[in-house]
Length: 345
Ligand code: DAH
Image (cartoon, rainbow, N blue to C red):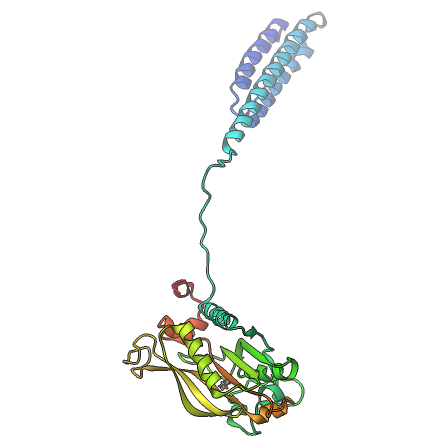
């Protein structure tokens, strides 16, 4: 190929490459266009070796000028593309500080926790202290000091979940919150005005009315001159704070750690004793037990029952949200953890 022909080819390559580079739509595209231009110019350059020595300079100049023109055009295109990318990013990444933000769903406390706290609030309002006790207990606190004789049905294997620790049947998951009566009498200065809510355990299979894990609240009052009248009055005030316009009912009963003992019921807050589905047409709802602290319990804790007297009561917490919300099934309330149900309460 002659020098003239090579110079013409260099001009053609230059024209095509400049169009290519100037038309690049992105930095990557520009990179490709530059690579194509270099390859095409290198191809032309290969022809120089066949050109007579004195004509090579002219071809070299044409090629050098083409290279420089392509480089300048690429440089210009690169800064245009970079500027466009920057202003695009500014637009894309702009924060609208005046927008209201995205709403998110907020949960609420479990209905049992709500009731637990409402109970604490009522008693704190009456001047009581709130205590929590251990969920793993020993035989002394759970049974013996509470005046359960050995062989009492409540101590039997079918009710108590024993822990495999120490002597057989000496360590257990507490079957009620009453052991905290003993712990408070052993450790607290008198008088005592206390409530103890907590988790309790029995060997029951989960069904509509039973659960191996449930909740109770215990109340203990020890002072000079405490009578059954104080117990009745306290329960009366407490039930009205919890349920509104209701009556308390006490039916004689037996618990080893209270004497006398009574079963505790409230008149039905829904039908006011007329009878309805919630109270199974009886007009009353059983909640728990109560009584005057037994002198044997005082003796076990080293308290002089000639000087001090006291009352105690205890009942299940779970029944309350069950009744108030008319939930038919304890399992639904305690076990299933179905948010579609719980979010309604
Ligand atoms: N601890 C008893 C139970 O779980 C309930 C109870 C009865 C508690 C009488 C008391 C009480 O404080 O005085 O069945």
